[in-house]
Image (cartoon, rainbow, N blue to C red; front, side, top):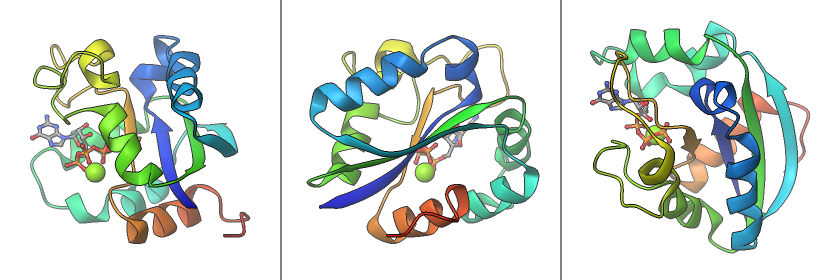
Length: 140
Ligand code: GTP
Ligand code: MG
């Protein structure tokens, strides 16, 4: 089976949506392998978002992501990387389909960066890298 790294971002945490996200993950049939509430450091975020360094939304993104607690979750299940991206919906909450986490719950007004509630790894390589960043002690 596959593992993926999920974050309930600061907007999701502040709005009390952590349980709702976990509910959808479990209802889909994925299991929780690790879970932690933590306020990300800039170092963690620089590693996590290395691919976006230099993009116009990079600084606002790091600022937003370090603004409060997130819930980091390792999920496990058959093709859960692709499957969770599908549960999450499109990056832009306005374009995300109703029924998806971002389509139902995300917002993109009033802030410099899209407040899209969740992050999910986009490939097996990203998942392994990101699990190492958020759960350095976890064996794969
Ligand atoms: P993650 O699961 O969070 O990685 O989202 P993603 O893979 O769907 O998007 P991507 O990795 O391309 O971007 C990371 C995050 O940066 C997004 O989730 C948004 O919060 C933010 N972001 C990405 N693109 C844009 C953009 O064009 N404008 C703004 N304002 N924010 C963006
Ligand atoms: Mg991404």
